[in-house]
Length: 92
Image 1 (tube, rainbow, N blue to C red):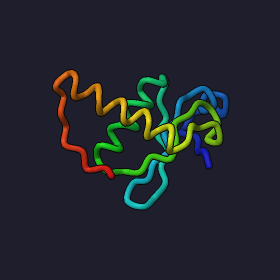
Image 2 (cartoon, rainbow, N blue to C red):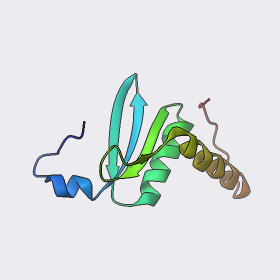
Image 3 (cartoon, one colour):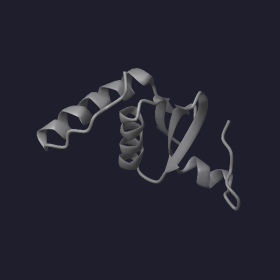
């Protein structure tokens, strides 16, 4: 379920990108303004060993699934190696 921050309207929430993930067994939602930020956050969460359920725009039901997130993460890992940005990942 989507929650509104103080002073935030439903339209403002619908106009943001979201990352659905699990933190300590609790499903959380991070909201950001750009798809690039959503992808970066999702990949960093995966690096830290968290489960990411989806990335999307607007409604939480409008998310790409875990399989697509995994494909994006695989690209993230490959590109990081190309640029010498090896980071020890704890995920899967």
